[in-house]
Image (cartoon, rainbow, N blue to C red; front, side, top):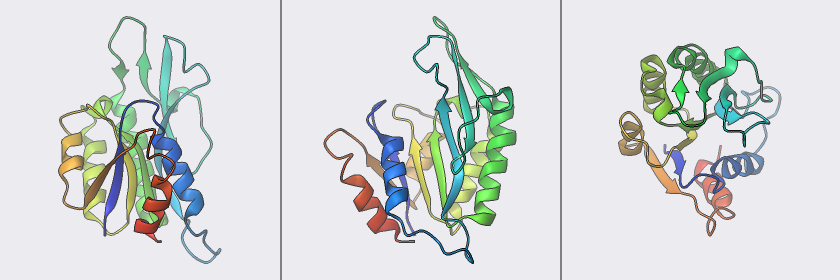
Length: 178
């Protein structure tokens, strides 16, 4: 089994590739596990503002813009302020539930903000050792714990760019065949 992680420049369509891939994968009948679960990170409607939050929620649920789901604060002129305790609490919970309930685990996105969220890191790496396929994103240019994802023997790393982002969902769906 291969886990697939996407990487590439900001705003090249990594999350869009994941969404399009999920549409191509065969939906489940009601007697089986849900197709996917896991986590995704996202900015709110104020994503273009210099002062904003990054949120984390279940990949199969709509975005939630509240304090409990905020995992980092971005303030103009300063380095982002990560909230490792929220990654450790909410992120671990989302991954753990996905391991129990889904056929595919989404991890969108792993990067440097989690460098002090050790329980979250352990849950991510432990999931890669398991038998449920993972489709995720690893932030380009991040180092440290994300190198463990890139170097993991079960991980195939694909770079997304404007030239390949439209064909990647077909390729990934073919590889994953759930």
